[in-house]
Image (tube, rainbow, N blue to C red; front, side, top):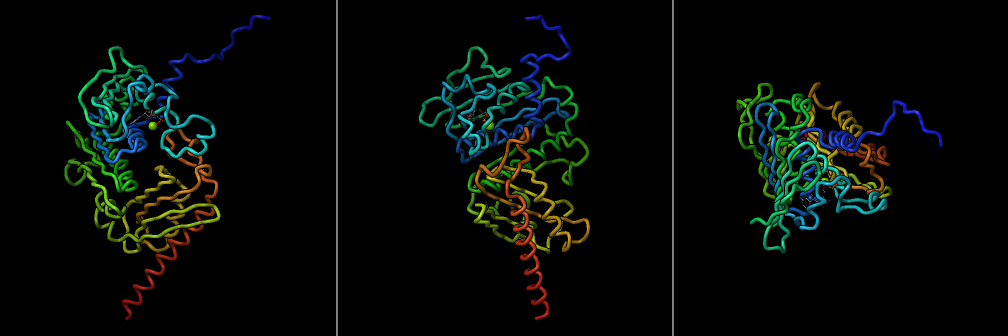
Length: 365
Ligand code: ADP
Ligand code: MG
């Protein structure tokens, strides 16, 4: 065997690979919150509390997410922040049909790569909680420790992006970062309207200039208490001016096993920005084709430069959705996208038109 000449291509060292992957899975504060929320929901939590502290435009970011879910047992703690360690899938077949938010075992690994992670967790049947701290995916020596606690899990993320100066510098003003967090929590609160959610800031989230709002940068916290209908939570999150102009409709495509329920604004409502909340199989996604289709329907009815509100909750067989095309899972590929678009556009358009006709009729009558 001849000794190979050393060329310019080399396999990157493990720590460099890990750092690249971490940067992709958790891109910002709201992204980290989303991952932790999803873990809480995967653990069957009924109550999730988020609290965020951002000081001085991203110089010190910390984050607590607590849930009353099933908790993490002592034997799982050493693996918690290891890459590709997950309790949610075990095989390729599971990957195709996974119904949990998580399946990659990447979020906590990534977060522990770019922040200090602490966990306090108690399995419901146990008498005490365990505390553990992580650094670069590894359990810190001396942990886990027994501590007092409540059933469920609290994940504390301190100094997010402490080792990524560029990402920290490119962060938006604290108020905007917090607003993005509130936005994510609010959307999950609507989708999981039977559960309760809170989101608050601690310490100084300063207004940071742009986008501080009429209230001079004082940002309102979110509290939902769990109720039977999504519309009430839309009211809590987005206000009654939206909630009272919503019409409910369903999209059912039996031949491809798609069903969905939607709350969309009627032609009385129009706003400066499009609020588009779209869940597919429970996953918050940014499905641009659906967004465009809705805009096309409303475009004919709303004044120029104004937009509707739309909340969609669509389910279909898991094997017809590919949630694995994007590192943050925010984009998905749907097998029967066209059929869905067509049916949805038709339904919304019919509803808006029939509402208009009945209004005209009322006025004339
Ligand atoms: P994934 O969600 O893809 O499995 P994560 O890195 O987000 O990967 O989490 C790793 C594992 O840690 C999960 O599979 C789960 O077993 C456990 N875990 C994380 N957060 C919680 C939580 N809030 N409650 C219970 N278990 C959790
Ligand atoms: Mg996860």
